[in-house]
Image: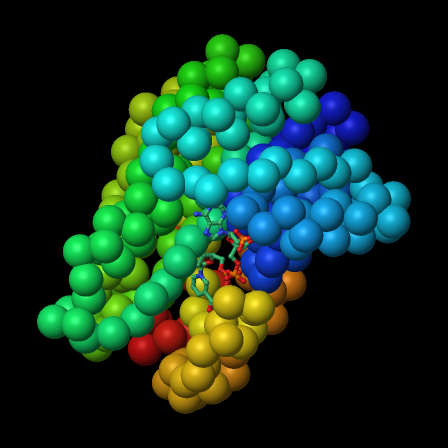
Length: 246
Ligand code: NAP
């Protein structure tokens, strides 16, 4: 899906993995639309991409469910001159803690941001990609959706839903030319994880023995959007330093 006329919508494209992905897609000549809540971060991201010669716009939204997802989808279609060719479902939150300490409010927020918003973005955009006969969707998962990690029940469960949805959407829209895949990162240095502790400790359990950079994850995401990945449908690419392999 490379080329001057393509448009990519990257939720959470103002920070960390999403921003690194937006920058790489913009370098390929793709018009990138980054979504976030914080307008200052949005402006900074767009300025950086434009200064480097890319085409970028910010869509301000708190993605929490169907209404916000549909609104973002329509804005993206407008900014993309009638089409969105690539969707990166990246915006996500990861509050950690034992199950008995999680509140209902946290439960609802995690599932609204991590599952409901991507669900309704795909519902709004995949049929339009299918009509055009081509599209690429990449969902951000996590290695802790693959095994029981203490303190990560809500987060892991929300991403386990994303893993199954990736396969279902590949089955639903793949026959019409829309490839749907997931990237499953290990611990990665981002603005989000910098605010938390324990990244090095978690990363030490994997063969790579260190956290990833946002660029290393973005590389895999971008690959899955391009024609180099033309026969890859419904896959979950582990970019976790080998953690789930051992
Ligand atoms: P991050 O640095 O915390 O950035 C999160 C991005 O999402 C920001 O742009 C934020 O923008 C946006 N965002 C959050 N909630 C939103 C909402 N409700 N509506 C709209 N935008 C929202 O995140 P990250 O560490 O790069 O993680 C990105 C993705 O990778 C997430 O899905 C995460 O679960 C996954 N992942 C990360 C790691 C890791 O170690 N970093 C590992 C595995 C998987 P605003 O704050 O401006 O709204």
